[in-house]
Image (cartoon, rainbow, N blue to C red; front, side, top):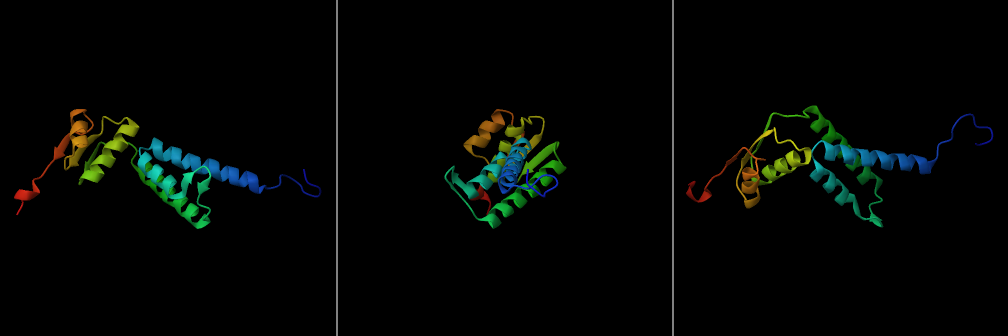
Length: 138
């Protein structure tokens, strides 16, 4: 309690603690909505380890903005019936998202084939793979 102050007094320590909790909630939401890879990228851009992290407030606010936009985008269509991934990297990302959500019911048509994508097809995470032979494509 502070003399001549009616009500609670803001504390920088508590405000920063609250912001840290909100950051954690953003990261948790991203993982829950199936984009753990995005959450990991955001963290790796700002944090090396517990003693080495960015003190650039503009970078932190930009990361929060990116996370908020991604959460809104994912939450807008939380349970799609199907997905189409048009290249190998997006195919891998789509499979990772489905696996993190346990969403075997979502139909996935993926493009290109790697050993991992073929294994995911055999495991039932991918419904079909579109492959091409660039050497015979003129």
